[in-house]
Image (cartoon, rainbow, N blue to C red; front, side):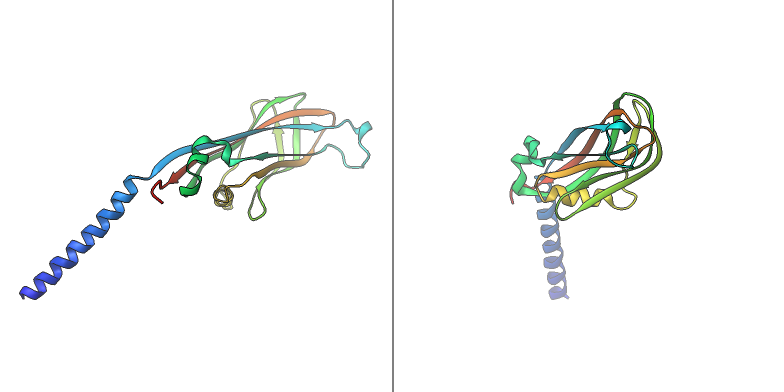
Length: 182
């Protein structure tokens, strides 16, 4: 009985120590927000200047460098996880209100791609396009950020009018976890 008690005591002590070591390690984790933005200046040319039959078509892309966040850059070799909190597109200005007959917003690198599709979406100043995680897009963006390389954000589609310009602000908010001891 004494041997069984000793074995149980040693087993219990070992479990407590292992658990405590893991918890102590997690206490040292650093968490910070890494938020990114870029503006798209979308131009739908007048029909007279377009050399195609497609009316109201547009396509614009921008790049984002995750290393532009100073904390991200500081802990780049110690990042152990990224959680996306919000991804949005907001219309900041527009020369005249239009309807997006179809549009695709994409966030991509050479390995991952997150896309959102919109149809018959009215666009006015202040219109906010929610870029949700309905098809696992945020998971793809987390992987893109974990690649720690420049990535591309694009918007392409067709509006119901020509000769219009609008600016869309793309915002990506994330929380990064790093272990400075690794």
